[in-house]
Length: 285
Ligand SMILES: [Fe+2]
Ligand SMILES: [Fe+2]
Image (cartoon, rainbow, N blue to C red; front, side):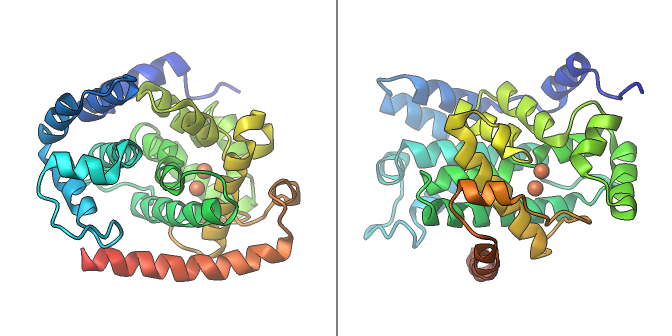
């Protein structure tokens, strides 16, 4: 059967409709330079009002607990550090590119957003518990992991809604169906975007394997497994977007992280607490 996606064509469409945001491009360039030029970085951050506002808000949030009010970029960079700036740049880029009011769609994009935030909160929690690395990197991973759905919603809205309907009716695997109909699944599409935006390799590879983490290269297998589990937990919690069979978990993935099926129940309860706390934090602004 002929599939809908020609990779070259999709690649061109992504470049045109979802180009790499300028601020992200400049921040990547500045931070990839081993001798980061602070004055240049400050100029880049200041040139994007939306981003500098977010950066100052973050620096002044209770989480960083600064005794003095952070009023300029220099103070914010010193307090937050480069890694937090990189993560905020990626998250803001996603919001600027994919957020905002979209025309009526037959795909539940708001529910996909809610799911992505839930997975971000959950995988951050797992990364701490399992000591997998920088928790903020994992939060970013969660925000990004299903962007492929939003790209499908833009270019292949009708087939996507038909596939979603079918997975609920026939208990099909969504990724298998995407591969059959489109020729790619949403994880591969997310990966395509992440590569176009020159995101770090560990991040792009983990995103690509979030539905079959055991196929990921050795160095990314644990992070892909955590993302896979967070996805399952959030679906089991029915937090945002979900579909039939979505919560079924491969025990081999649990074993890789030295977890037992019973741990899933504990993590599900803990996720619900974390999600409530995160929602309360957002309300406070
Ligand atoms: Fe996914
Ligand atoms: Fe997901």
